[in-house]
Length: 178
Image 1 (cartoon, rainbow, N blue to C red):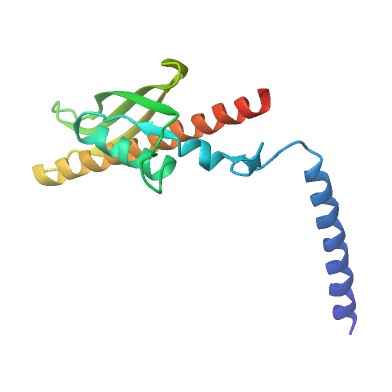
Image 2 (image 1 turned 180 degrees about the vertical axis):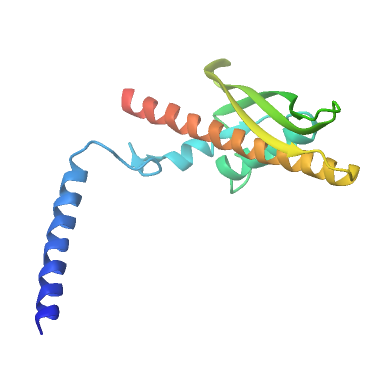
């Protein structure tokens, strides 16, 4: 009997703290990133970006990831912006054995990007991001190649996530300034 009364009292206190927390959260000035602002949603703003082609296999991975994040319902009919991305890839030895064999590499993928306003033809936002993926060198050449491609895919995914996040921040600031 005593336990049920104790749990009811604890549940009542938890509800009060939850309500107080929600009230305080509403006053903190934070707003949802993908929520409505000035009649537009962030998803609608991002969906107006045309993503230019990027060369090589990792470039296609970055572009495909960006398409999935920015324009999941297809290319915009009348794009407002164009996103140009330039990639630079470096492979750096990480683990060198006593017999000078390299057994681990870091694959660094650096992406410079610019968001161009198609009406004015000017770059409205320029930035860069970087991601690192590691892979092992093993006796099987095929396994090493697959491991290297997987590291590149992971780095491409991370680069596209960071570009998307920076674009969201850019558009959020534009909404707040405008």
